[in-house]
Amino acid sequence: MAQQAETASEGEVLAAAQMMLGARYAIALTGAGMSVESGIPPFRGPGGLWTKHGEPPMNGFQIFLADPKKAWEDKLRRTQGDELYAALREARPNPGHQALVEMEALGVLRCVITQNIDNLHRAAGQKSLAEIHGNFALIRCLECASRFGFEQIALDELPPRCPVCSGLLKSDTVAFGEPIPRDVLTRCEEQAERADLVLLAGTSATVYPAAGFALEVKRRGGRLVEVNLYESEITAVCDLSLRAAAASLLPRLARALAGLRAASRA
Image (cartoon, rainbow, N blue to C red; front, top):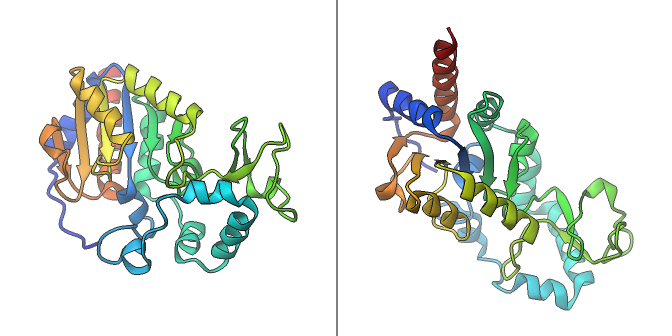
């Protein structure tokens, strides 16, 4: 992704921090922009994986259910040489991820809803987290929704079965045509219902149902603060848009929040 000079001023960062501190319940919604800043290629656009290699089938979940054994064999083969999986394995949390953890530790940020599958929020130490599209590093039971690390499940017999309920296991990553797991969707809905401010970081908020959470908060009179390099489709309804990369802007915002919180207690 082409980079551009940051235009977010210190005054705008301070205004965003004041909005967040004034909120009763602030949450964040993060997207692919944060992944890109950790070296993970985007799916769409110039240099995107789907641009280069073509989009995956829109009925991926139905293909899985029709022949889970073959789907698992294909998946394990892809993980060995696939460009995306190589990038996911090598990626590390960037300063933007760390800043969201700091905001949580300050008691300002209550939850992060992420559209990313890269495991980076977990790796950074985010405690209150909802991965709406799943996590590439986990395996999920389609029956009881238990999740496991790949190292916890023997893959010598395919398809693997859940050690809890014997249900069918698949990658936690949500495939095209697959419903969002009910437990995650319920958590996102509960967090959005409680929120009166959403910090949008590295997302254009156009993919549903994730985009709907932010718009619902706005509809109820809440505030939206956007952090993005570029103007997006949601910019017009945001209360404040900070033009900058999340990896560099969010640490500035975390510092401003810490400063205001310290000053209020002095």
